[in-house]
Image (cartoon, rainbow, N blue to C red; front, side):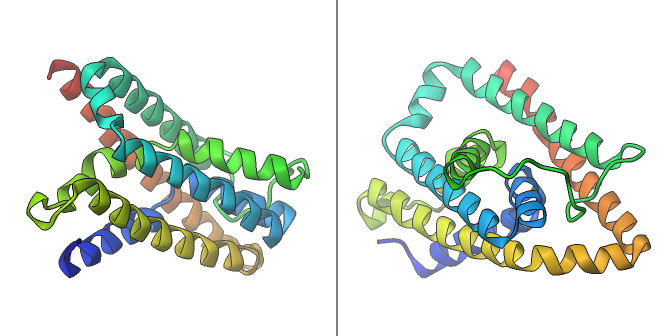
Length: 214
C-alpha cells in the first residue's frame, strides 16, 4: 500500500505536468476549439487509454526493455524532443497560432478522435518520462508489492491528468472567445506557450547525449 506522502507527491507531480503545454494539451484544445467540447472529451478518452497502456507496460517490464535495448529509449526521447521543438516553432513563428486560437481542422468521427488521442498520448515524451523515471521514485519496496504500488500511483496520475484536461477542454471555448476579443492577451499566451514547449524540448534534447554515454 502506498503512503499518503507518495500519493500526494504523485498528484502534485502530475498536476504540474498536466498544466505544462505539451502534445496532449495542444491536441485536446485544438479539437475542443475547432469541433466542440464533445470532440475534446472523446479525444480525452483516447488519451486516458494511452495512460492505461503506459501504466500496464511500465508495471510489467517496459523499463527492463529500455535497459536491455537503450537505443530505443534514446531514440524515443530524441523524437519527443524534436516533436516538442516543432510545436514550439509552430507557435512562435511569424503567423503562428496560440494554443486557444481556432484552427481549420477536418471534423473527424468519434472513433478517429479517440484513436488520435491514443496515438498522441503514446508518442508524448512527458508520459514516457513520468512512468519510467518519476513514478518509480514514489515506490517503496518496504511497503509491499511494488507492482501494486505502481498501479496505485498510476491510477492517481490518470485521475489527476484526466480531471485537469477535462477542465481545460470545458474552458477552451470560453478562453478562445476571450483571447479573440483581446489580441494582446492572445499574443502573450502564444509566446508563453511556445517558450514552455521550447524549454521542454531543450531539457529532453540535453538528456539524450547523457543517456547515449551511459
